[in-house]
Length: 613
Image (cartoon, rainbow, N blue to C red; front, side, top):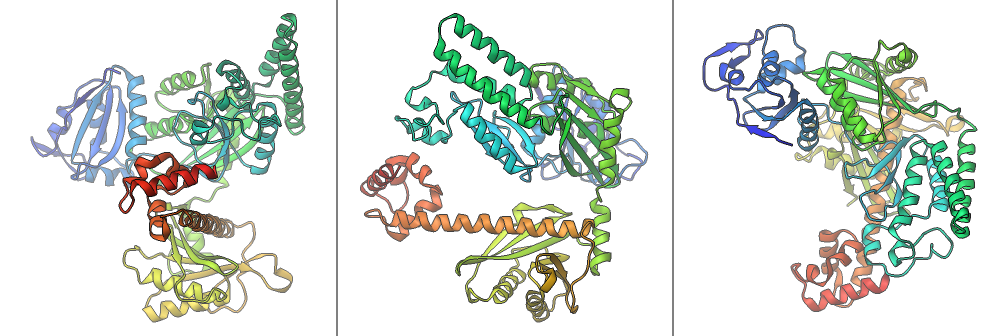
């Protein structure tokens, strides 16, 4: 790319001056920077990257941060931490744009907007980089060269469509690991659900034809796909290749039925994404309305911290979003973004076709801009939501850190308590914990909750303490945890969410300490919806964790049964490899390299696992 890296322009030498806000800035910090296009990196004293930005003129851009004038609080904090600036020169602005976003994804600086994985919605993933791509469902979007379609709000509908697509396009369904070692067709091949590329039953070019048609369909190019299939039928018939003509005709009819079924609720129109941006002190809230064939199919809200440079942040956010997702025909923005031509060029390269980006002053986009902004104002921002929590739940202070607890077991086996954490109403997944029950009886849900909270609140490694604890349970659980807090001399707010009694036994009710009856919150209130959402996330994590541990137990039992393994070696295998597929892939050499294993035992393991596949 013709990049050239520059060393730090330290502020520790040269004369110092203030930027008008009290920050002392060394002249060399700016004067040593070139007047070229490139990317600049602000670092702290520990050399951690605080912020990454791009510039047409590096010196002018960096100088703008240290001029006098009013700045938001986050920019103030950033300026107070900058110890040096390093830079990377690029040949042009386009290279700077791409490099900036690659560095943001790699380093995830604190003061940049970084698009996090969103596992709320379901997407379809097509592994295009593989010689024989596979289509599957995922909730994790990664920058791995695959093509992602979605996200879609309704999982059941997506699964139904996937089944139909798999019957029309029999792509492989196995994992890359299984595909790599399979030499015979699986059971799906005889019933027409897999084309068996693993066994050479279809060549790469014929397989790619199916993949290309599938991409057209999922990208909303129904007419192009159907027209191409019609032309293919005619060509095959003219060439007397009636088997190919019949195959294409079956695909044509199946796709036509699928398209007509979808259009029961849709009218023809363009694929558009409408973005609304709301900039408030301390936070940026972003709304995305996704229209496919002219119909709104989903709404998503992103809450991000405020940033020093809004133009850079918004273009970077859009780059991150579309780097692993299909690009629509049109993108509508509620805010003007500087260097929009760079983003448009990138989107065109991604889509292989021109993409129209419309700003807020374009009359063609006025209705969609207004709709996107209206959706933003319907969302209560965390800055006001925490105050609503405090007021409606009678809390001591607005909650910034919230911990939610749930108990999970299967008919009394493998009992555990889980903790999920929300920071500023966003999941903080590195804070999630699982507590395996040690003392309480498995029939005693209240006792198990008491044990979990006692262990959490006395564990100094888990910090900080929350402003609010939400329990999956009612009066009994609240009383138990209140007792724990009293014993420990702590004052923390607690609420419980559980099904009501008698006529309200199917409704979620909110319980507070020292209150006989549940708190009657409006079902439509943001506070109630947020509590339910948090409880549901706790349920999801509890189920996932429980399944994971049960699977490990089952795997452990299978491994223990292998001659020469036993419990200790089974645990070592699972700790190192985590799955049977990984153990099989490691082979004799990989297994025998583990502490406590020899070649003979490794051969027994590989033999047993291969026989079980």
